[in-house]
Image (cartoon, rainbow, N blue to C red; front, side, top):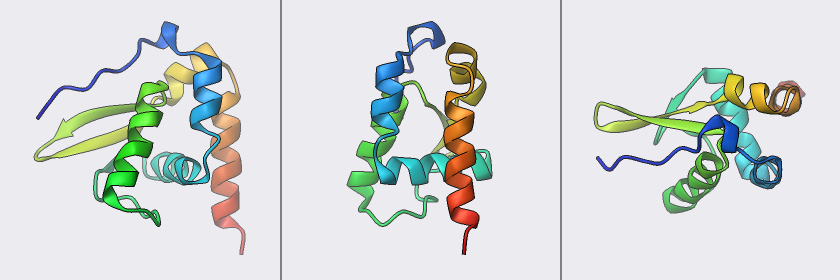
Amino acid sequence: MRALNHPNADSIELAGVLDALADPIRLQIVGQLAAAGGVVCGGFDVPVSMSTLSHHLKVLREAGLLRVTPDGSFRRHELRLNEVEGRFPGILSAVVDNVIGEFARP
């Protein structure tokens, strides 16, 4: 399995984070990751094809929002919540609270 690049926490840019979070599918992904603590590929519940999901995960990873690690023959995706919050306090936690709140509404 090919190793993936993750930006260092100090090189994460606010514009990149906000751009990555500006898509409704990526917000769903962030919400699912926050609720589950981590998701293996194939475990996301989003209305897109696998190739489109891969693109969204790549955008989130390159923005510094996700850490992807091998998990057997799969890859596990986890939010870099503490790292992003350390760089931009309150940004990701506010987004996560809002997204999870949307899922909880009837």
